[in-house]
Structures are given as C-alpha cells and as structure tokens.
Length: 271
Image (tube, rainbow, N blue to C red; front, side, top):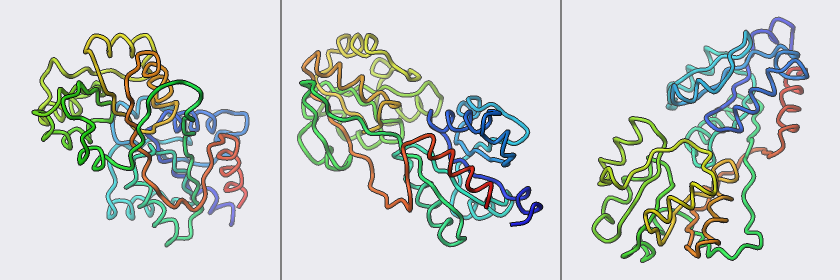
C-alpha cells in the first residue's frame, strides 16, 4: 500500500460500549495509538449520549446514528474504511453481522473485541441460563413473580403480554427513548427506574429489597454490564438470576485482550 493510500484509508471502530471507549482512548494516546500511528479512525455509535464519551482528536471522528445495510455500504465507501475493529455490545448482533459480511465481500481486515464473560465462581446464586428471551417467555419462570428486568429497553416490548401474570419492574438507561419504550410496553412509572451504569452492589441490593424482587432477568453482559454485581447480590439475597446467553456469531477472529486489539491496529497501519 502506498503512502497516499495509507492516509486515505480509515479504521472503523464499532463503538457504543465501555470497552470501545477504552480502545479509542488507548489508540488516541501518544504511546502507541492512533496519535502515533496516524491512522484516521471513525467511531460509530447510536446515540448522542454515547458520542460524548469519546475524546475527539484530529484522527478520531465519531458518527452518530444506526446503520442499515444500504447505509453501511455508503459509509464504507465515503469513509474509505480499510479495517474494522468491532467493539459493539455482545447483543448488538445486527451491526456485527453486517460488518462481517462487508469485511468478507470487500476483503477488509476484521477483528471482534469481545468483552469477557463472567464465570460462575464459587457463590451460591441460583443462576438459570437460557438461550433466548423466547425460551424465557414460553416457560413458567416469570409466573406470579416480582421480576426485575435489566435487559435493555429494546427487549421490553417482549414482556407486554406478561404484565397481567407477573409484577414486572424495568431498569433502563436515562433516555427519552428508553422511558417511552418502557411505558409503551405496559410499565407504569412506579415500576421504572432510569440509571446509568455502573450500579454498585449496595445500590443494586437496596433496589431489589425496595421492590421486594423475587426474580431478576439479565443478559450475559460481562463485568462491564454489571453481571458480576448481580450474581453477588443474588447470592447474598437468595434471589434466582436468569441469564440470557449471548447470541452465537461466527466471528472471523476475536479477542478479549486490549493489547491484541491495539496490535491489530498497528499491523493494519503497516500493511
């Protein structure tokens, strides 16, 4: 690749997670990141709130908004994307699948940065692992329970039909979209709490006790998603924890090591 082409090609960092913020920060530092390698990078996020988490530098740009397949093709061409570092949320499967397809068709280097999963450990929490929300909804897990849902606002409409068979509470991000979705899904204002993570164990415990929760539903979102804290509180209070497993995606290559992700960027800069 010529020097001119090096300057034109950009790295695409699929963001929206705390790990992607950490990666962007690491790459933008003078000690071996984008600032040193001079790799132009475009970070994509879906909300203005997420955009504010990334420090903007001459080589680091942030694009806000969802991308569908048609927009993605235009984005890759306009941005002249030469490599993809996917640090999206473990459950944001649509963007990951589109990125993998695009990388394969365009022969663009792709690396998935996957947050580490939380291991069961030695606590005494009753953890119920389910493959999907549909498995949860089709079963009898929620019936007559006081359920705290920490699953994100997009999943809340799935629980609308359960509002008359269980007492459901939702913890969501403090955004208009999240609150509107919760209300539209049948959650009354006294059964919604809007908090931005991280949530401490003390606050988690207090909330569960205040609402007299008997079952908690969460995603396998790792330490960054507070899964370890929920396991600890569930063990302490003797409350069953339902964990929805991560969707299975066949990533071309992946890592949970920040150093490996940065090395991927360095190798791209030398290609």
